[in-house]
Amino acid sequence: MEGSLYISGKLLSITTFVYFFAMFAYIIFVVGRNRVIGLMGTILTASGFLLESGGLVLRWIESYQMGIGRAPLTNLYESLVFFAWCTAGMYLAFEFYYKNRFMGAFVLPFVSMAMAYASFSPNISQEIQPLVPALQSNWLIYHVVTCFLAYAAFTVACGVSIMYLVKFRKEEKKLPFGPILSLFPTTALLDDINYKAIAVGFPMLTLGIITGAAWASYAWGSYWSWDPKETWSLITWFVYAAFLHARFTRGWRGKKAAWLSVIGFLSVIITYLGVNLLLSGLHSYGGN
Image (cartoon, rainbow, N blue to C red; front, side, top):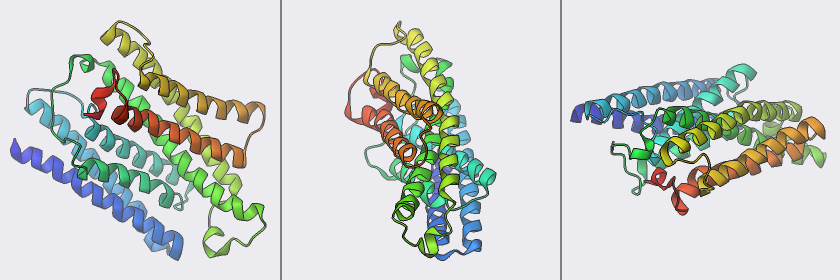
């Protein structure tokens, strides 16, 4: 059993470094415009995703070996690892679809930071612990998976929006792009990627809130209790609903859409980490 635990932890620790190397490869690719380095970034990201997949599966198996038998999604360490896994997978899907690696320099830092915080923070326990009674439900997997797929899509949207704002600033002032910005995707394409990522994430977030309400009814006897996590989830939902509404009805694109995407992601961070670590409520166990 100790050997299995060691392999799982080792695998996820190695994944942390693989993602860091991938991040630096993408950054070097952006600066140096070396296609081989860019390809290396993609290979490293895909390798990290596969290693992390193996680590999550091993951790799931370990929980059964300990007689606990639960998905590795319930504490802060596991949720950070799962967030990194979802975001890396979502990014690879967008990179493959749009055949553009420049996004990696703006998305992989989020993946790397999540894994680094999970792996090296002294305040985060990596132990596999039994579920508290409120978490002992099949709704757990449905709720967490849909929410984190949404978070992953919103992370990609935020990274692309930062790229857009950097390039648009030069474009707005009619300044030369320079050797780096000139190789960025066009602002029109970046705006389209931002919209597509949010279009993927929003229904996932909606499902996450619905499954969370069903889970709350099962666990606490009420669909909604205005717990800080629930409240901030609703705020985040409204931000992205406003993004889509403004795009369809008022034609909001470009700079306004990019800023709204960044604001939405800040709301995601508060919903995910801020509430768990700084506020008390029914979801406080997520920070343990």
